[in-house]
Length: 317
Image 1 (cartoon, rainbow, N blue to C red):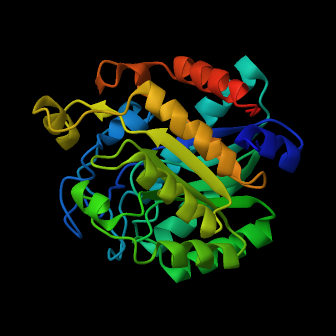
Image 2: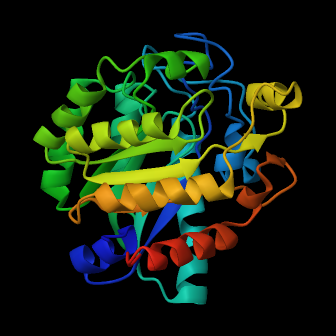
């Protein structure tokens, strides 16, 4: 299996650590009312953003139609500060010398084009950075931005990944989770990104409401057919004060079991080609906001169980 760690060692000759960045002003089109309100039913974005609670909150939220961004200087300073304290930590504790900046929180292309150009360019200028990874949605990326990113990657010689939150290839699922878009442009955006020399990682979730194991594996099969360069899989877990938490408390949703999740991961790794980079096969929240499943509290337990099952299936991970 080509894990992200092995890929980076092969590509850059050294261990590479992803540095997650959370910047003021970013939101999502299914939060601000552009396509929906409330965000995805499982989303309490702070849970995905370890740096978010370390920064002051700002009422202003960006969108691509804005002509000015009064937060830009603050964002550039946050980018630099968050990068330096995290990279210093990983260097001092683990000896890591190379980093990829991961624009993680919310939809990181949902902002004025000039803002995005300045943020991405500055990120690649930071010391010991070998590339970027940009988390976004397929309804929030314009071809103009892909053109810019393709040129930036070529001129800088650094690697740029676009991480698309696919989640599911079933429109009924996307509607139920309040995604605010369907599957109509998923394949085309992946192909357009690759045409410009960008790497594409597709995020998918196992355990979404009303989905069967066959449906989940079909989502994986679809993003592989669309020629994703990387795959990120994680279980759906329930965070307090989310719409999914309400369904859980009402008995209308039961999370995926550890046994079923491991079975799906084993089946998934059997069909993922050796050339596709596996960015992640586990996820969790190690704090008291996690309601269920409790096995998502500790990713070490997840990975130990997954590795044991993969070993039994003759798969090295």
